[in-house]
Amino acid sequence: MTPRHDIKTVRAQALELHKRLIDQARVRYEVAHGRVGPGEMLRIVTFDPDFAWLRPLTQAILAIDDRLDLPELTHADAAAVRLQLEQALGHADASPKTVIARA
Image (tube, rainbow, N blue to C red; front, side, top):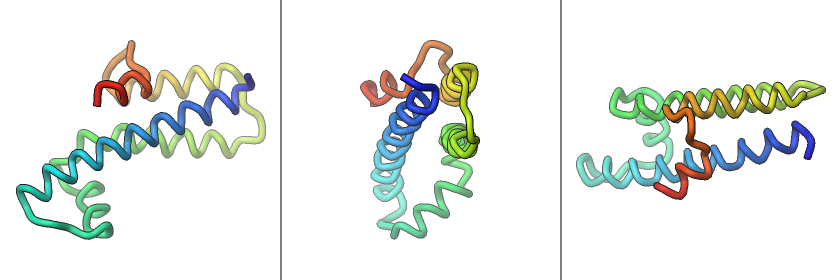
């Protein structure tokens, strides 16, 4: 596999995890605060202090997108992406796929 393919695979896993986490958090939020629309949920996820825990993962995904814009990617780039996601998830031994399985 190429580094670009590896990075795209990890990005897809991270996006799936991100979506699952938001979906679960949304349910809990709506139980406490009432139903919210998609635009309002985006604002809440972006700015509400109760969702600060999600921002490192969001920022890591955005950094992956920036890296994918580079014309050439190396295996070092792929390793850096994995490390950034591991740090965002708070586990040196966690992969997005593992965290999804636990979610």
